[in-house]
Length: 79
Image (tube, rainbow, N blue to C red; front, side):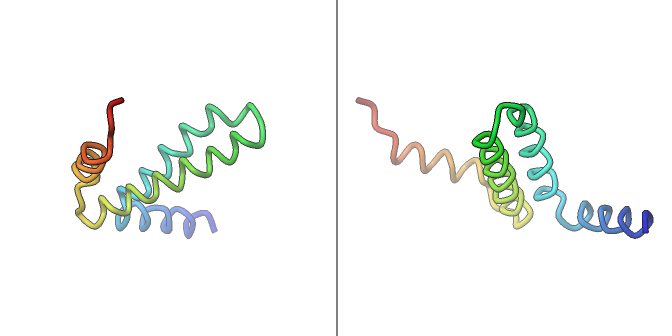
């Protein structure tokens, strides 16, 4: 049982490294906030989802930071 779980974790890491790392970093960041209550748990889930989204985009070879920069540059209004 333990070996099967470790094999599956290695398989996920080898095939989806950026998505796995994104989820782990989102969860790690969220754990620091988790102590404060329910809404922070929702925040943790959002962080993990965002990490998964960004990691999956990176796995596909997309430049997430460049797209984010272009979006902010086009939509940010100074007022």
